[in-house]
Image 1 (spheres, rainbow, N blue to C red):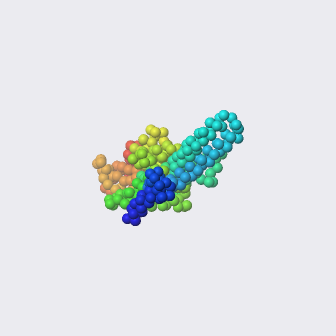
Image 2 (image 1 turned 90 degrees about the vertical axis):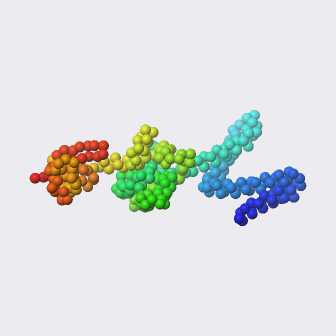
Image 3 (image 1 turned 60 degrees about the vertical axis):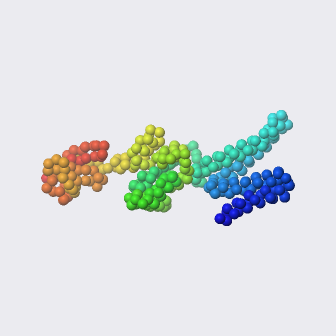
Length: 327
């Protein structure tokens, strides 16, 4: 209520001050009204524009004007009294406006990427900044990235976009119990990765892409902009990223590659869990989830038995091991 009264006061006082202080005619009233509108516009700007955008814009304008002033000095110092100097002087104000605007545009558009520059990074011909890795919400919900990071296999900086964190926060605040648990788990994973003991360097990427609605598209845009790899376990997203020329690190592919090699003739100890499809078959699982089908072992379901590997079958769903009882 107070702010509305203040706004009305500014609109009334502006023309009155203009009339008595500037000119006692329509000109003074017009100038006072314009000043009041400028104040109201400034208030709207302060409410709508984030503080970091305003600071970045101000810094960009200052640097743009400094650059324009340096151009003025260089033109006067190098060309002296030539005709070009007079032409330059005529367009000096326009040059300052253009360079100030370009400085503001550059600062506001690129401010979200400044944090990627570390003070202790030195670029030389032999040592370049390692390629960054952008993670999606699926990886954070999955949680295996914590153990992988602690093992030291992730050497590059890990980038978590702000829009991914916002998506996770929405899950954590969801009324659905399953979504809420996944969201909270992902937030806990982020907290663990941010600790110094995590083994990786975490950076929060603040830049959003408001013109893009889908999070997956934002991720691909982010990776393309930063020339970073995408860490995910989403098969479809991996395929789209590969089509667009973005390098992909798929956690599921890594887990599949890390499964222990089982050779025919090897003896395994397996807990027989349930019946198989064929007569007298029993099914068990290795620690990595690989299915083991044992012939003539149905009577031993519910117990642990030593079996001998007979053959292996690789399918799209994973690897299957066929075995027989170790007599």
